[in-house]
Length: 129
Image 1 (cartoon, helix red, strand yellow):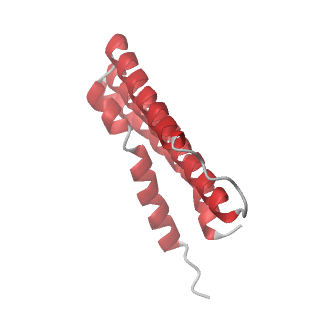
Image 2: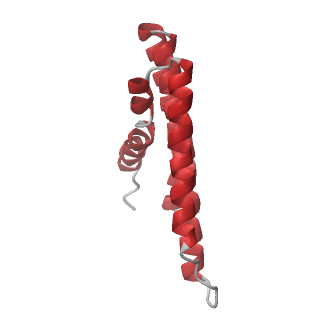
Image 3: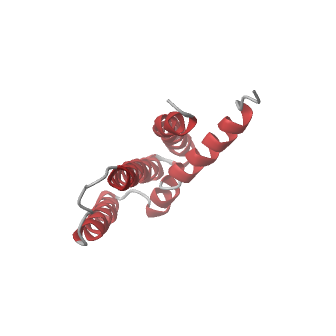
């Protein structure tokens, strides 16, 4: 397994670590509604990461295999529908549950934060040989 594949395997771990830490800290200092919002935002970020990973893997696989019929125009629309359903569902849950919408938006940033942590990890553990 190359460096890229290892990084993709580590990303969900970073996301889980940040989600757990952020939920615990926000719950301790800001209360349950904020912690719940952060947790829901983190879950949405994880699901979004998996959706993007699946779409990119499929596109890469289709571009590498000879003689494979390219996906139709509906594929991009389907991804947009899935993402829209994710956002709409999260919004409805947040509004009906009383969780903090602002905290959910902050929780959604665990994925970019995990990517930054992975970059630092790669820089620190880089083998110069």
